[in-house]
Image 1 (cartoon, rainbow, N blue to C red):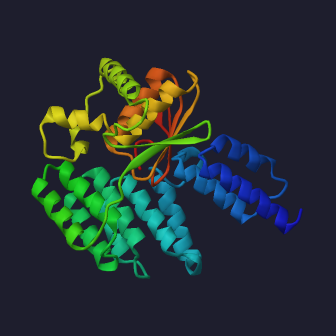
Image 2 (cartoon, one colour):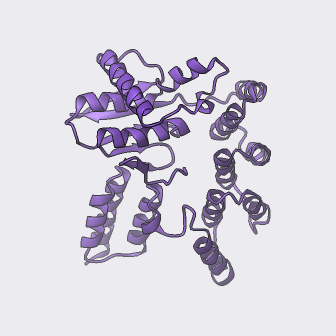
Image 3 (cartoon, rainbow, N blue to C red):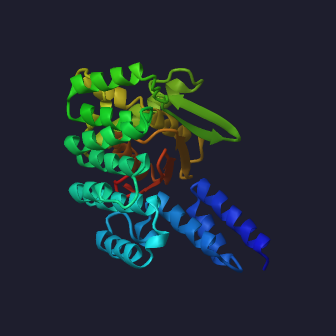
Length: 318
């Protein structure tokens, strides 16, 4: 088998993983006549981006394994250690709630941390609602990249979740004054070769009334199984009832609603989203997958989420 043949197989493997098709990717990987380090790395990264802990190993809460591996490479393979290894270790610590340890690791790195390392810490602070550590991480990010919209959004969302609306306003003002533009969130589904895209509160799709009708039906079904909206993710200082209504208009829910009324019952659904899926939508999609008996794949800005039978492949950390 030539080097060119291996490259071709690796390209096909990457193509499957880019579409979130882990099953086909794994079959392709198993059938490869020859594998190189790129083959293995591609497959491991694919599993990690889908939150498949058992297959990828070393992430998503496997703290002790991650520590042992990191200690080994920093001690015996130090010349090969780069910023990506530190970003991964910060992520592992963050998943486990070891925010202080993660922050100390960043501060004591042998090389200068980049914005991605600090973003890994900031993301963990969002998950664990640690505002103080988040502010320190964000400050470091802004010193490196004053126009990092992801950091502004994470920090603003964390303030909103804590009900600190004055800080939310100050963060948004700082974004405007700095010329930082937040990318508008959208989600889309491809049906019969046509892209159907939605934004939050969308009313423009030809089937929008049927979509909202489907969402109202889902809303009642989810309440029957105990769902209560997490209003922290509404991110606006309005009345509680309005917050819940706003959540049900999020783009990923509209895309799923469209897919449910436009596809064969029981078939899988794939939704693409340009931003991170919010916490309440994540919980809702888990429940929807159980209620309708379908696998729902959502590709957000960070990973593939595979929702099936009421659980997600990311183990609720992303």
